Image (tube, rainbow, N blue to C red; front, side, top):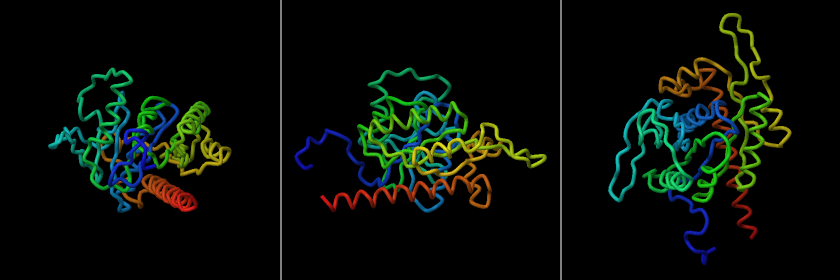
Length: 276
């Protein structure tokens, strides 16, 4: 590989072990909730974790981590990520505060994704979690062209429409050669707070069945619970409650699944290199 032009193809970021993208086929499936809580769990498990909010058009990460801080610009034009809940975070929401939606063209988008990866002073990280915009498209391509990804996680609700869109997203990751590490079923079911009966809002188990069909790891399911939404709305992700909390426990299970999948994939790749 030594003779390749340095700019050709993705360059790994020094000091960052694993970059994991969190995607979904459609909006409204709680992808950012999963990304933020996954990042908090990994940090609580002792990993050094960064979080990129790559949802340029609707950045929700600042609200979910409860920070509207402006990142500082360091010398050499490097950006210092915002610290919150043991994470290092960057979001376009920190840079363009307020409700003005950003209208951006492809090249600008690519530029921002690249800056978030290469110009932010991440330091050493075990995991860099990237919260993708819903759907398929430009941001993923910019990401894949800039850095090698350890893999992607797909978030879907069990509803048919969401599952169809998850298949599309899967196909897209496939086309750009990104391993899908597994599927998370979000808003799996709802437990009535009064009678404790479980209500399958979106026909529970759909994402798990899809994972089986496609021979993908099923990373876990998360209930539709007001406590989770409340945490996100108030900048205190439910994962902060620790494993004793049933809603948080779900996210810790997902985080363990992700770190195992990434480790297994890294080990497999090392073996391949030795054979060559």
